[in-house]
Every structure is written in C-alpha cells, then in structure tokens.
Image (tube, rainbow, N blue to C red; front, side, top):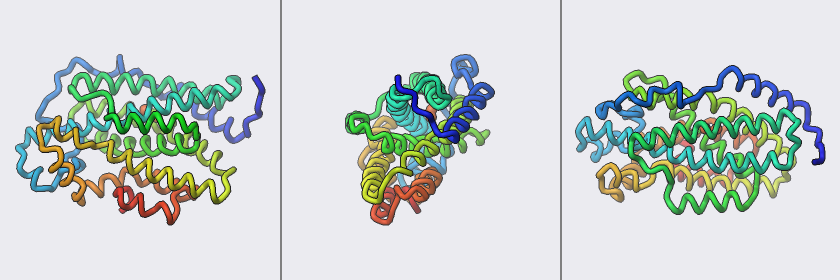
Length: 298
Ligand SMILES: [Fe+2]
Ligand SMILES: [Fe+2]
C-alpha cells in the first residue's frame, strides 16, 4: 500500500464528518415504528409536488386515489434513490481501494458506505410495506452499469450528488409536513439528517477532482453530466409508476411532461446541484439547454 498524503483540508473535512457521524447516526430498524399501519388516505408526499397535480387527470381522481398516487410517487423516488445508493457504494469502495485506510478521508468514505447500507435497507423495508418495485427499470439498470464501467469518478460523484441533492430537497418537504404519512416522514427525517454529511463530502471531492481539469475535459464532463441527469430525472418518475397506480401510463406521462407544477418541483429540487455544477464549470452554456429541456432549470 503506497501512502499518499491527503491534503490537509480533505483530512480536516473528513475528521469533522466523522465526528458528526458519531453524534448523528440513526438505526432505522430500531428507530422507526415499522409495525404501525399505513393510513391509505394520507399521502406520503405533498400533493402539490405530485407530477400530475393541477392537471385534468389529477382532477379526475378522488381524494383516496390522489393520496395513493402521492404515496406511489414517494415510493418510486425511494426506488430511484436506492439505485443511486448502490452505485455510490460501489464507487466509494473502489475509491477507498486506492487510498490509505489510515487516512480520515478513507475512513469517512467507509462510514458513508455504512450509512448508505442502512438507508438502502430502510428504503427496501418501506418499499416492501407499500408494495412498490424495489428495482428501477432495465434502461436505468443499463445506465448504472455503464456509469460504473466508465470508472470516471467525477461523473459518478456528480451524478450521485445530483440524486442526493434532489431527494434531500424532496424529503425535507416531507419531513416538515405534519399532514403527511408518519412512516414516510420518519424515513425522510433519518435520510435528510445523514445526507447532509454525504453532500458535504461529495461536493468537496468533486471540487477536488475538477480542480485538475482543463477546459476540454470540463466541457466533456459537462455534456456527459447533463445527459445523465436528464435521463435520471425521467427515471425518478417513470411511466410504469402511473401504470402501477392504475392509470394510463402514456397519457399520465404526457400530462406530467407538460405540467408547470411538476417542472417547478424538479427545478426546485435540482437547484443546489445546479448551482454547484455551474460554479465548478461542469454546467456550461453548451450543456445548459439539456438541463432546461429536462426541466431541471426554470
Ligand atoms: Fe442515502
Ligand atoms: Fe447519501
């Protein structure tokens, strides 16, 4: 094992994150009341954040069906996040493989893997209780395999950071809204607390990686990142989610794609990632149209 001296700022940040992990780590298996029945009349996410909210299709549904659709969408977001977590865990393990495990930096990366293991189990439990599929569709699975094969750490870091910021913003709203399903709020609260550290770590790592990039590499990363995130956000609420909710998948997908309320939600949840990518020059004027077309910038 060759010992590479990590820059002091990386070590200091890792030390801070390790201390925060000791103070604020949660065990969802014991801290969440899994046995409490789920009230089907209570939505798992705010109705105004449902992809169909405000459309004619939404208005045609009764209150129970609207609540069920909100819960279905929340469950779908967890399936999508679980997929992102599995990729991130593999990326982190590969990252640590080349590092010295004696550094705080490597130790924090392993701590994050432990956090993500607990999250993925927590999401799996929620998905079992709601009956939603635990795996994303075949196209998304292919993209995930491709992303891991590229072994491009900055692209993997940036795309998983996008997923983390997006779900963190969505779950922060769920956690705070007392009218929503208690189980969804408990799951969201634990995830939001622990994701704050992950976002801090991924942002610093991405900044560190991008520092070494010349203009050509930065522009290539910007294109790849825009295309990947545009694809990923489509997978966050895929057509099959509507079919599982008993709706016409094509009609519902079309209605969501034209829904200004939904565009506002996706742009709001993407805001922090977009700001960071702009600052690092990996969202540039050539890739910005892709972000706009995907409704990730309003
Ligand atoms: Fe997570
Ligand atoms: Fe995370």
